[in-house]
Image (tube, rainbow over all chains, first blue to last red; front, side, top):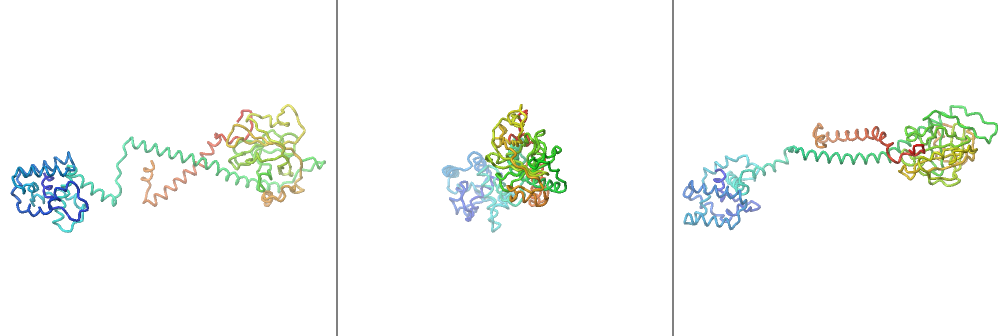
Length: 406
Length: 55
């Protein structure tokens, strides 16, 4: 009833400032001057019957066709005109009853404040009627103005979230977990390829410093009678460092500590390269075998494939410097332990050479094969004679020797 | 999940942001310090030794 009666007041409520003309208003806009006319016959046609018809017109048709066509509107006008026998009847289906209007504005005060800026109370009243009319015409109830109001308010008030349903909530959480898993994987790759290098290099430098410091505080072993005979390094406990590798081919500043054992933790991951247990010590007849990462964890043997025959590998221990010369490489399967025997590849022979064997993974980032490099001891310098020429001026030796002595 | 975390964080958005960054940093630290070192040995590119078992 509120709807219908208020919808009847439309004709007066056509604010010229309205930017767009909605289809539901068209009926009114076609008769811009009729509001005055209406006010002249307030009670004439606006009987209960008209109102009922009006209700059916506005509310009922509103449900089925939200936007009545112009033709439809004309048809209704014609009907109304035929029923009342005079053209004014067309307009009388919108009786300008001020009492009703007041009722309308009272009925929906909550919907009004956010609608349009109104200058005068009179226009406001009319606008109120207009709004409710729009609601009736467009959607058949009062919700649209409410919606409008909410949209306007949304920006100011904190967002009221509708709780997600169980299905949407589960899907969203699942998606978030997937994204999180992807990020964690990326983080793992970053950690593995970048951070482990940083950590291992830092640990390695500290370890080398510590080692040279220890050496400086120890007496070197007695020199053997034959000066050409290298001193065999003393075995050390598992997981403790006993030497430093210099490989000029890997860079002028390359050095890595070598420790006892080939466990990933802590030796290979943090202490440079590791010596296979039960293999020979530096300078000893037999096979001095080491393993090292080719990628990640400081990648001590990253460039193992760049070694060329004749390249020197210098191992510094407390006793001096052992210079091994690279001879050849091989690519083997991971279970080919015979490369560690005193005569590499021939476990049955005893051997009389001082061999250095280095193993690393091959190809890079794979555990399919192993890259193995063989070298032979060609020179040896006691610690008391200082570093051999091949590393004396290198950055690596500078760095190692500057704080420990040796 | 993240919306929920954001909602239960105290303070205005700036404080929330600080808290969120602290949380992220804590998670990253936890992963890098304790979780990744445990799973890294199972990665296929960390084997450098020759052994009887082939690993």
